[in-house]
Image 1 (cartoon, helix red, strand yellow):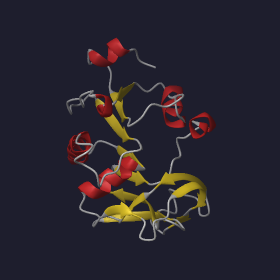
Image 2 (tube, rainbow, N blue to C red):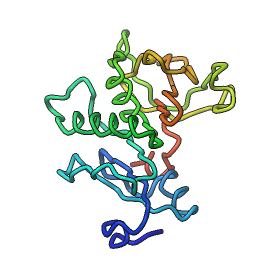
Image 3 (cartoon, rainbow, N blue to C red):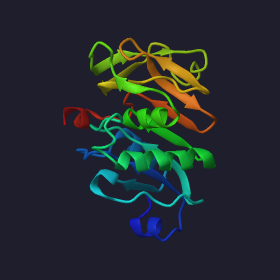
Image 4 (cartoon, helix red, strand yellow):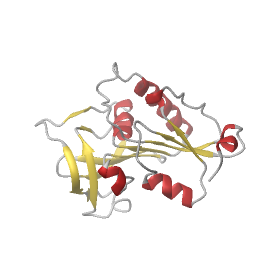
Length: 195
């Protein structure tokens, strides 16, 4: 994995990972990137860290989950900045992955409704996913996924719904050729879940 000095002097292409809370250990996504030798730059806007400039050094962006709500932008104004950043990422065609809160921000930015479950349900635990026809090559039908969310999203216009679930219907979508958003948490380790 690259050093911080390599990342900041611009000598390597990097994957930007935007976090929204402190985790007990590196998650499965960060471990996956490290095994592949990817340079990763963690950015924590909730701690006041600025988002990077969009340039050719950014190979991809992951916007992770967190305890914040997209519907509470006045309380978490940095989420607006993140949505603007995601817009620039999508316009440049840079690969973008949104996980839970990150997926909700992408959906909201694309004009879809994001909000609490109409009956007040909260997803916490493992739930089966059902792949749509568009998502059959992306998500194995019946795959069990970890969820931890009180809000969900509508599928944005011009996006392809990839998977549905029993509690929050929309679980994954693809927008264009380089943006994927998932409501569930493929990155969480047992230690993070216990945390």
